[in-house]
Image (cartoon, rainbow, N blue to C red):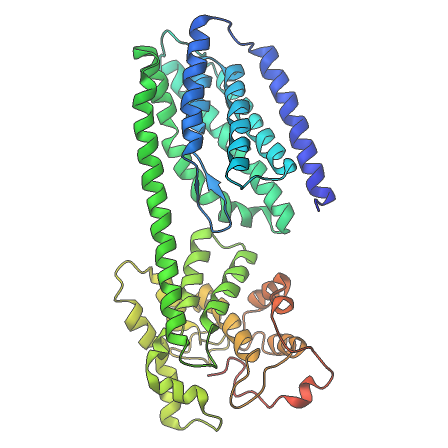
Length: 445
């Protein structure tokens, strides 16, 4: 059910969009001419084609589009009023298309998306006109139109991004800045960089007319293909890594699924801390691969061992981060931060960890996050030398070992994410502390 805050945001956004549309129509009424209608039809055709090129950028179904190119082109050629008409038609078409594909959104989401886009287009048109830009189908003077156009682009993307980020931050109860980094930051640079294509399209249309739409379609297809392939390759790499890790862990009942759980929890903690989207992804990858150094069968024997470790076994355990780095570093495209996560995920905040004995902020943030996620999973899993702990015991261990083993900020973020509440554990009972044996380490081996 939609929260009161979100209902308020949708209402305010819709009202603001209505006011902006009225302002645009009053200040810049559409020119009723055959040439304007021809340009409108051409831009609608380009916009509808752009909508068909939408593609998913996340597993959750979020999409991106290049339909802003015909919208910004409309501002340059026939003015903001016509740009609003194109926007409204495209969003009705997108809603119809989503319904046909079985991915229709609730009405309040469609209303918000349409309103915030109308608001963004209105901002682009008003800024363009305010700074001296004038739409024209006859001639486009670079000096007098390009600077206002760039300012209009900035206005468009700022309004669009801020509205989307704000509603996500409310719905997920996360800081605005954190959501901006995770959602808008990685796409807005790309979108602004390609927005001059709209200007180029407008210039070509003035020179050669409606057939120019054919020239515009080719770079749109190229952009969609290159961006889509890049996203699909990243997803394929992630899927292959997960298959590899699941295959390795399947041989040991005590670690089966461990790395997948640690990766998912590390991602949630990193997002809660407001880290940049790219870094969150690298930390998730590092968490997924943090124990890959244990591929050696000797580690399976150690993990199954109920008694104390021998000195030789302890040395072998302490070597697994470096063994993991040696394996993963053979992948030339692997980011350095992933290797840092793998190498240092057993470093303690007080400097008593391994392999280098780093302390405090010298330990990379990704490694500090994985240390907590890894420890939680170790405590929540039955081991040969002790039974799994309950939620409250895990919570107490995290708090007790804060500032010695764990980063206080990471522990706080962990508790705020609800990770402990989401875990499938045996029910907490007053006897939890009585039934569990002392831990060798909070993080296990």
